[in-house]
Length: 363
Ligand code: MRU
Image 1: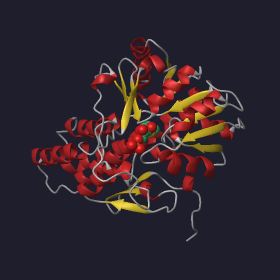
Image 2 (image 1 turned 180 degrees about the vertical axis):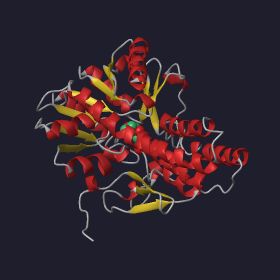
Image 3 (image 1 turned 120 degrees about the horizontal axis):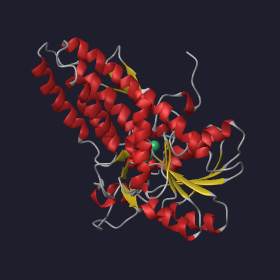
Image 4 (image 1 turned 30 degrees about the horizontal axis):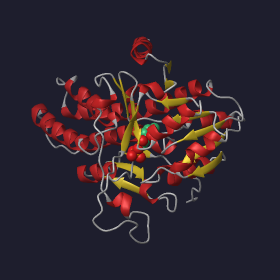
């Protein structure tokens, strides 16, 4: 078998229906090793999401959709109530793996809706519909990212400097990424962007994943430590910041990887516009403001010893390790969705975006 060489040739998440497995690239091993793993049990799927073997809001949604399908397929009963009770248990378990990215519960709720809307059908038919829905969630993800890329591209011009934080790239989605979608589309069209990738402490998604995938695609990318963004902006090297998101509140406040709000505050100082690339599945109209977004807290070891040959902090020191922060909507110049670019005031703009979404669904 011919060996694939480029990370862009691999699927971030895929379904192996024959073997009843969710197949992912183990992102904790990148960039050193490209290991593909198969997840079959609820515990394996939960762990893969919690441990960030699969991560990034849209990819988590796709993995959860395939995951719940695979688990549903294994429920051996013909009785709807027994099937649904077990389905619900597994769904709630997967939903508990990470709290901040709304795509996780969004995808699982969508799958549950398939079950509830088809009560009168046989369990075997429901399983088939669950498969179709999970595949559709992934296909939609690709279409959505491409549309975000097209809208995002209208905000920049050839040769621009773009700064990004964390990984909202292909590895966080099924293709194109969200924040990277304009970069990849621009690359195809000869835009020659200069991209600055924040390394993104403590889990280094920017260094390990964004720098890796952009470099593998031939994009001009420069890796910087998180504390260097002010310098590159002050030097005039950055024309726009593009980042992804894990949950956008109804007022436009946006939860994304820890450190995003620092970048946005610095960008404001240097008059650099900050754009959030946001599939509408990440906009949570049930969360009024960023204050209501639950922020995942992670283990202290990620800060004190992970990635180092030896521990880099005194034993017993107190550690604060939130995985995400909330960027105030005042710092955001635009929220780029698959249905257009939302501008402040976001409550109003989102109404229009969701109206376009509804209209498109009716077509
Ligand atoms: O903890 P992670 O790596 O899952 O965090 C990922 C991010 O913060 C991304 O920017 C976000 O999920 C958007 S991915 C398109």
